[in-house]
Image (tube, rainbow, N blue to C red; front, side, top):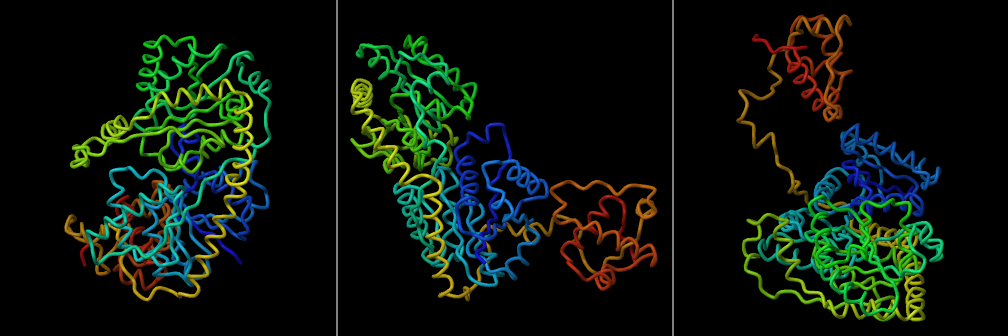
Length: 543
């Protein structure tokens, strides 16, 4: 039995833009593809709360792109059952849709409770956050084993992690990350494979048939993606050089302030008739949108990127890409074969970096991005070449599509991940369980740290008594108070009902005698009793 587990919420809830945010899209597409294409017999998804569990169930159940046989392999659990599951189940691996929040805690649980050793893996996304260095400091203290790994989606992302880990280990000579850094890509939905004709694509998008389109696909944000002013400058010059009508399409999400800035830039350059904004476009039309373009351009100047899904989506549709030679993009564009990489030059010294933790994060990111110069003239020349040379454009598009199918379709990518998990599991089996346990470095140890805050802490010597409200609940003349959804994972209403019945018969009893009567799960018992006191169902009384 080959069982996959995760403590990371691959199905996340939040804003209406969830389906557009890169990390959320990549994580859900990963899970969906894992269900459809891997050889796992079961998938154990541990959820944050009952509400999160239900939203996960609803999301998977309603997704027609996941096979029914795959859905039947999914088991949903809450965190309160994870220790028992680890004790009784031989997991093949636990994989997380991130590495910073859940990795260390999962390693700790595995080391402490697992029936048999298995790899814990997590994947990188953006690595430029203020907290990344502190997360890495926790990582090197996590007691990760040689069969654990951080999956890096690009060579540049892997190098960032290597540098970060090396720097953290230099500061703390007694801590060391013993796991691996594995390089594995993300993928794209194979529905993009079937080539759509330019004519049909333009009809679908209501584009002009006689116009040639340049497409930018991504967030319109100078702080998190790209400053598009250099692209607009290049396009303005390009428009005056070619002997036919061209349009630039800027498609993606944007906040109101940044939308205003982009409209002002377009107006300033007199490009109102030549640039089309497609804000939060219909995702069902993504294939037609990409296929309608002659060339896609990706002028990212921001260090937040570690991969570049839009680049492989364009390649899958047979559209060559002109991309900045930066971070994850480097791996995705084959120079002069599937598109062109445009030279970038970054500042070598930057005084604000000495106190970057004092700056507002978005301000720092804008400053760093503005210090990244893209060769605007080269970008214009490569777009001009592709727009004016149909044979070259078609050849590069064919090369791009072939490479995308061979390397980046999700069914291909998932096999790469599974091969890596199999290898790590072999190492885990040979290594056996870790012999040394370390506390979870991310734990805040709330109870120990804040124990002096209240008048007293819970004790088995405390004496309990049923209140009139509690009596009313027992007699069903009053309803049990409604607990917050977040607490239902730790509140045991059945246990509490038994305690109330016991106290109704006894009048009063010590917590110790209650625990002797009902010995199961004292952690939930403690919480349930205190919750009942809080909601006036029980009270503490003096002996």
